[in-house]
Length: 102
Image (cartoon, rainbow, N blue to C red; front, side, top):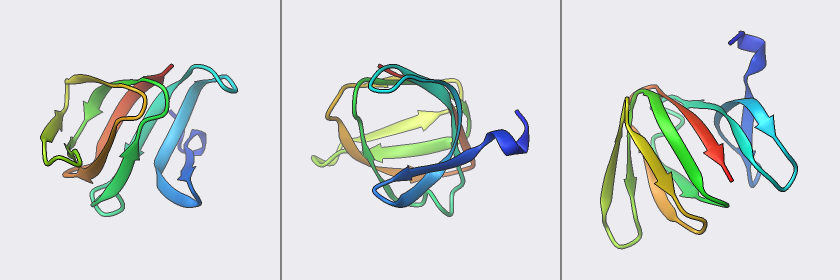
């Protein structure tokens, strides 16, 4: 992917990493690559709209749910979170995921 194919991912006016879109249907399925570094992703809110299923291509991160459960995200792992899922996201190392939101 060329450097110019990445764009900021904005959520409520805040930049949350960068995205390379493969599919982006208005109100429908979305797919692409998302990346974030450990500095900008030190602690961000992760709110799922739709079902977010992804494969971690590179890096490590941790999700902490409101009830204190910790979920480790590691390279090679495949994860899926339902609509309405929320957690605090902490990026441990430069992170890239391939995602599908439906």
